[in-house]
Length: 122
Image (cartoon, rainbow, N blue to C red; front, side, top):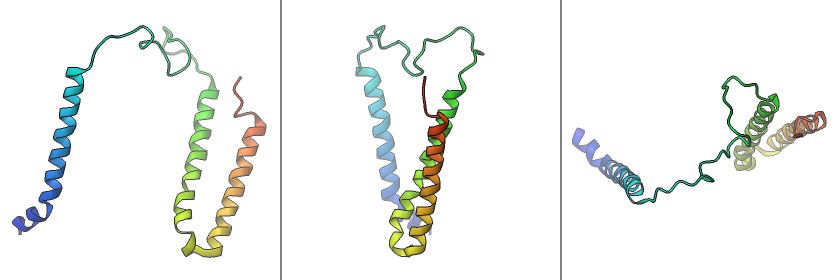
């Protein structure tokens, strides 16, 4: 019984061993052969758009979080369009109308946030 299972899954196990081995080999080759010449421009701050500060308890502007939350909300809602588009032929007119209502509400929410100035950056 175990021999049959191993025979069936041997190609998958072999593929995983080769993939892991190649991944480790490429990482080791990259570390060993890549040049290490740091430049002040490469080491400069680029993620946040402002210089690092001494106090880690400095207050951030709430707009950073507001824009991030709005992006996540609208991005996740747009993710509902992919399964809908794939199954549109099966769900028919009811699915189409329900998605149009969903998109209408999404558009109203986007316009509301735009008019409130939540997307403006000063």
